[in-house]
Image (cartoon, rainbow, N blue to C red; front, side):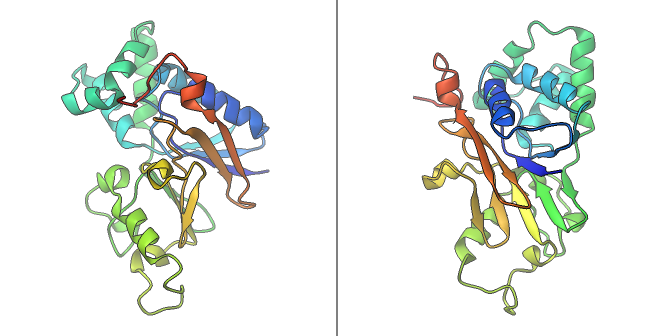
Length: 243
C-alpha cells in the first residue's frame, strides 16, 4: 500500500492518466491530490469527471486549490470573473460545453466536498498553497491563505539548510507537522522540473499549467513519478502560456 501525493493538473487529463500509468497505481494505493484540477489545458471538466470515477476505486483526498474555488463559484452561480477568465477559466467553461445540467451539479458537489487541507496520522499536512498562522493550519483565520499563500514556501526556501530543526529560531509554522506538501507555486519558476524540498516542505507543482509535467511523490519512499510535459501532450494548445 502506497500513499502518493499528486501536484497541480490544470485540465491536463492526458498527463494525469499517463502519470498514474507510469506510477502503476492500483486500487490499493491512497492518493492525495493538492488541488488546481482545472484551468490550463482543454480537458478541465473531463479531469473532474475522471477524478470522480477514480474515487470509486481508490481512497482519495482532493484538496481544493484557488482555480477550483473559481470554478466552483461559476458552477454554483453561472457568474464568472475577469481574473478567472484570464487565468484559464475561459477554457474551463468551454470544456463543460458537452456536460448536462445534472453532470455539472455532480461536479459542483465534488468541488464543495473538497477540504482546504488534510492532516494524516503521521502529522503530515497537505494543502494547496500554505497558511500563515504560527499556531498551525488548524488555527488559520483567513481560509484564502490555504489556496493563495506563497509565504510558507518562500520562507522554507529562504531558511533551507541554514537552520536546524532544534534551533530556537526554527519557524513555528513548520514545527506542527512532520512534513508539509504543497502545490500552487510552480517549481519551473526556479528552473526545476521535479518536485522540490526545502526544510520539511515539499512542493509538488512542477508547472503542468505551463511547460512542465504532472508529478507525484511517494510520501514514504520519496520516489518521484512524472508525466511528459503537458505542452508536448497538447501540442496544438497553449495552456496558460501567453507566448
